[in-house]
Length: 190
Image 1 (cartoon, rainbow, N blue to C red):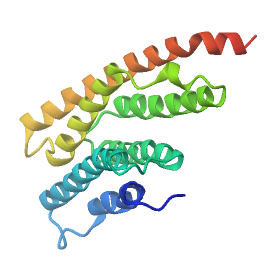
Image 2: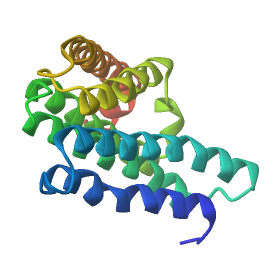
Image 3: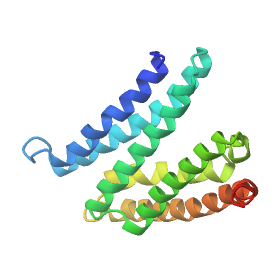
């Protein structure tokens, strides 16, 4: 494993997950509920920024690696799954939307791994619809972390709509990737 700044940023995202989740378990005399929301939102946004920054930095410094290419999406998926689990537990996100999003991430990750193993990874490269899904999801989660329904109903409604859009785009992108991979799947299942 190459130890460089981009990989360290990726590891930092993974290490932030227990702090991100733990913020909501701090006693209220440490952090008020509003401060918990702000702290969790700040941690999630910082992780999202480092996700973009570590990829840019790896390319800029010529420090891309197979390990970094593997670890980066794993870190992203772990942070999103943790955030969705927390939001469902807090009653701020629909469990069905969370399951759809997390289930798609697991399915497409497994599909990409299998396609890479058979030498066909390029046929399911990241698509525009996948980027739209990520944008909706990465917009919805901080809004829902920051704005509980009882204190910020309009902002919470926006986050709920964005998460619903993300879930629909999740299904659409999964169908797109499965369609792209179908020739390989059907050929190898005979």
